[in-house]
Length: 387
Image 1 (cartoon, rainbow, N blue to C red):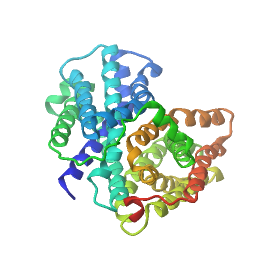
Image 2 (cartoon, rainbow, N blue to C red):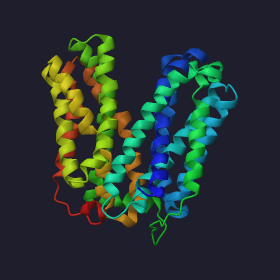
Image 3 (cartoon, rainbow, N blue to C red):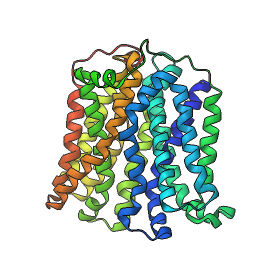
Image 4 (tube, helix red, strand yellow):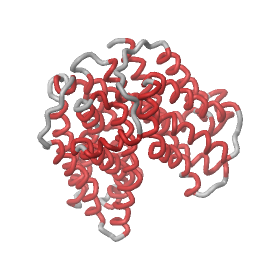
């Protein structure tokens, strides 16, 4: 693996820091004496940045280059982590820092996915992107773990809930230095992208279907993360066991599946991997609907592994249709991450209506759609097709 790929993988690793804002919410709630709803503004501010800055990020990448957008994102992230590292901020200042982290992470996602194509050898883009998403999963898990562990380690203990921020800052700084040292032969558009050129891509069915696919995929993943634990409790697991066998195992299997994706793509094509992942994810979500304790547990396993490689496969296959539009496509598909806010609300409504296990029809329907579009007649060009 070349040094450029390693540096981009490190950038993906630090993207996971944003996912630590959810576990941090409880500590922030206790420190600032705010309600649960107000405390959830931490992950909300990260999430809303994706909706607001993904398309502008794609346009900016086309004008200043993907490497420079990565550096801007890492710089914003470092700035957002520095303030809580050195002072105890007021709650509004903390939210501003978290929003800055959200913007920076959005830029990392928008630039990181297509720049991986620039640093990958022919035929290795999908494999490397799957590995990169695995690294992001490792970053998410590690960052969440750091939130609870660093508060009791040595000199960091005195910082209490802020203990993980100096480590986050150091990681951002290291990634910034490594990316800054890169020499990347970037593919650049002949004409700088615009909002109209980005949105016009949605007129092409292959792109509109893919963007909707990302919207539904992220929504299905967020729905599983939110409702797997209470579903397992309803199926007869204790609260502690449900937490362990539910979201903890689901997200661990997501990370394992993404890391395995690199090896799988050495023997199968990205399109075959997408079809298999969509089918396995559909089975995983559907197994919850049968009301069986052990089938639900099997659903966690199938769902975690099936959900793992949808993003890198769908993204890389879509970009290979129009590599010259990678920046605009990245912006559109990152904007579709907003599905993580909408789809769980629909499932939540069904849960409130006492649908019980049948509420898992929502993520199942999302994956039925993904399976359908994976069977759509398509002949992408470029190195994803060659893998």
